[in-house]
Image 1: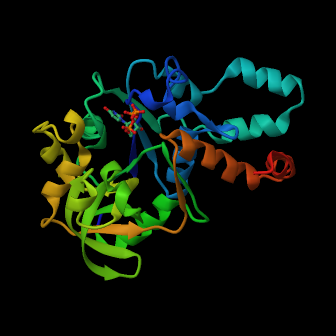
Image 2: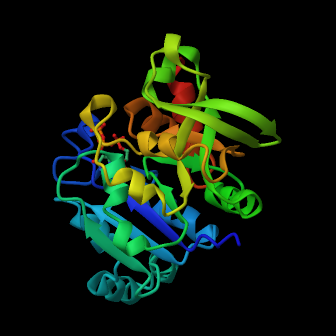
Length: 290
Ligand code: UTP
């Protein structure tokens, strides 16, 4: 029987070197797009997909994330005193219920595959989702919800897919596609960061995954791949041919917030959707006269 996806893993143990010095003392995942940290967008996306347990794989210097998903008693009292009920309500609404969140530490940032492997005891023997907060996805229906619904039909493993320019393949995990059925594409091969000439397609893996617990066995070998890191993609490649494995072309726009241009694009796109900001932002763009 196809088991439901109840747990989500948020790997937040990376160093975020591309955003230094901002990330020297602050986790990359706490960078705000408009006024909300990246990690909160990811948690809300998971909540909208029906996820009940939120597992954070953290590292040194990431305590701001733990504090963010906790009550802030002093701040709450102050907001109540100042009659800022709306802000208070929003603040409390974003905190998962007690007991829904757990943390484990990736003691060394050895790569995404290693971070996911660190969650093995908290995940146990059931399918789970992985969300990378720096891949911010703006969609009418939560991207993970779209995938959870699709995976309920297909079973097995699923990754989010998007098409990228041919000369960008070396930035992504790239699939070899099999049969296509609507938004679903069968995955017959998977390579991490191939050079354009060696890429099996231009369909890239985006940071949303639904994985079977067997992935932990494939990660246990701790084999290093591209960039000397323990890559999740390599473990996934070894799972092809076992359980069903699909890519899902989600509805929505993905912003690479691990990259400076992508981060600015996300801020602009989200600000333009806000009634309180839109006019001011447009006026500024017009003033630039680009
Ligand atoms: P990235 O490779 O984009 O993040 O990993 P990074 O290493 O933090 O950033 P740069 O390249 O140095 O700027 C994508 C996601 O995987 C997590 C990161 O926190 C990020 O959410 N990650 C990466 C880990 O949790 N552990 C790792 O060892 C590596």
